Length: 93
Image 1 (cartoon, rainbow, N blue to C red):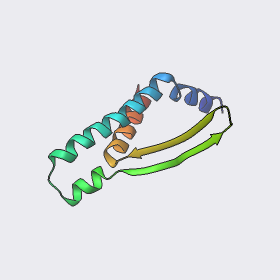
Image 2: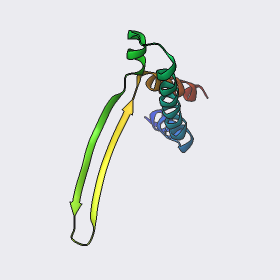
Image 3: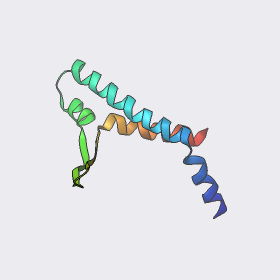
């Protein structure tokens, strides 16, 4: 039990979270670049097809202030692969 808690603290550091987010962003950037250069093919479509999830805007009108909340993610297979590579590398470090 103590080992699992130590492992969880080691994984959930700011450095690791930032590294995983940057890996996802890098995967998205590389995916958008490859989308313009690669010829249209089924392999390109599978690797670079974006999957969108999240929830749309929730509006809260409080007379004095109008608040709007929303969270959407868009990830492709390349970004997903880079995120898992980063997680694997961070576990070894």
